[in-house]
Length: 264
Image (cartoon, rainbow, N blue to C red; front, top):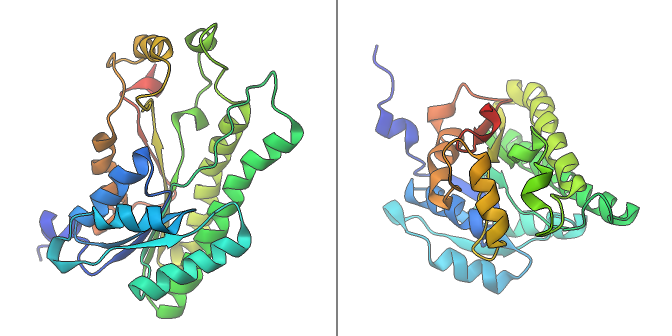
């Protein structure tokens, strides 16, 4: 018997997704992907009005409705309130994209113990939200889907000469955080597979913002097999694969979108 068509597999109509940090550089592309595929999207930000403004810009495929919610994933009380607000808005959550990130630019020469520990708190927030999604879908008797945002720097070290004399080195706490998220992905995936909750990691490579130091970006281009940086829309295919039924037999995996960086 033939299975679902490609169009059916990638269709997110009737699904509701929560994207943390959905107003940011990559978060915007992720939110657009889910909306374009038919999902109702709840964008979260530490500022509700900013989240609502971003949600209002999303396409409404098939009549889906989008929402903005206030959520700080570094604060447990805010996590609980924000997830509750997302449920109140959308009625349910099927897909969670843990994309929000509180950054700290201190490198290995200057980061304090407090700053290092604070950076690792991003992982705590990811886990707590993932558990909320898991418990919510299990209570509903529904399938669930969690995507954690990793990084190529969770897999490989940075090149010191790409940053030397231009800006601080890539933060050591960031590398530690992203490496940990890869194993969190595997751990949650095997424990939650029988509950019909998939957990995967999406690891972007070099996707610098426009304000990144030009000299650093130029050096990074020489480290990439493709010789260029990534563009936000180039994450869309991987996001949709993991978020949709097209990836229904994929769990515990890390999809790397890096222009071949980690293939050297």
